[in-house]
Image 1 (tube, rainbow, N blue to C red):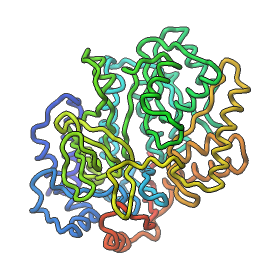
Image 2 (image 1 turned 180 degrees about the vertical axis):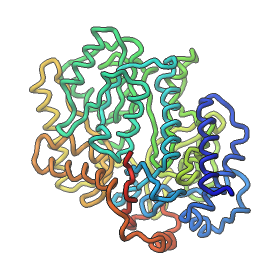
Image 3 (image 1 turned 60 degrees about the vertical axis):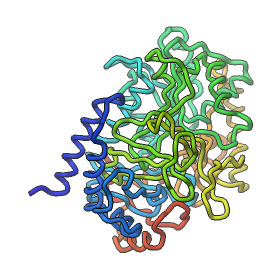
Length: 495
């Protein structure tokens, strides 16, 4: 007799085959797979079933993938959203998010779920960051982010380590440690690439590069990386760099590293959905296609729609709304997730682009992105002090370096207030400022310990009734700042 676990495993194997077919393959029966996945989640995911009940959506009401109820990403901050027995969790990640500043999401995956997220993002990374690489080709990768050893439940760290393993040479390295950016190691690696003529790939947060490039400008330092080098950034701008625009950023990449615009790639990652979306600049260049305005192609195993901020109806190309994702690789959680990212569709709905995070005005979501110039963590005295230390640490490392007079980087989005669960960007910032101050070092260690605690904390007090009550209290989740369970299953996140 077939069980839901058997059904889930068979579906996983089929979806892995779809992913293996590549980003250019067609999947005319996407809806069939979506209906099978919806049926599985409706049966096995109690929180999703409660969500459907709250929306008055029955199994018979859903015949198209567009009809699958979209779970707000904030629900992951207040509930355990899993479609498998939580004791089978082998991977646990925290997510930042900006709608609720006091609650972090927890995303769990079982062994099949881990295989799916790794396969999807290896395919996407290979197709958009390394589209000119033949099978087995590798290059040196320089990663401006913490390693999984430093932050074992940080999705950014786990994902970048997978990229290192799949595409990096043995001398690839993480360059962000507890004492900040390894400036000497970074400069040495860049100079080695110049001298050898062997291209390198840099991967990191947008803000890391911005601070790095600004420091290089102050010291009149430039690099001439060999053709084929590339820079991948994740994140965006929320006013922390003054008047730096994305076009300014690309210009700085060319000015400081001699890497052309065509070899700059931005990635959008949402921990609540398995598949990262890359822009197509480098892929178009590798295929000999003319340059155009950047967009993010959606792979065959996913669908994305921009939804109207008032009634969540799908919008045509070019109109800005909340981005919603339907991802077949989300077998261990829920297929349809609507985010607080504002964006629009392109290419007749086959691509998308993000324009910023949503903001709430008068109790409603605004169609204009939040562009307040203050830090997302607030304008408190302690964080103004920390930002002062950031600038101090930049100047300090620039003074003591010789040829490697390059500033440490800083993540631009600090996603937590004092006392909240640490998010990935906050941890990166705290690592960078800790070298200059004992109090900052304490904050850094507390933040890193959060990622470790999340992998070991037992679920002693968790009950299904508590989750059901929270969902009943707040069935939509988008504007919720209501604290919810901080539960993690025993053994989650351990290999």
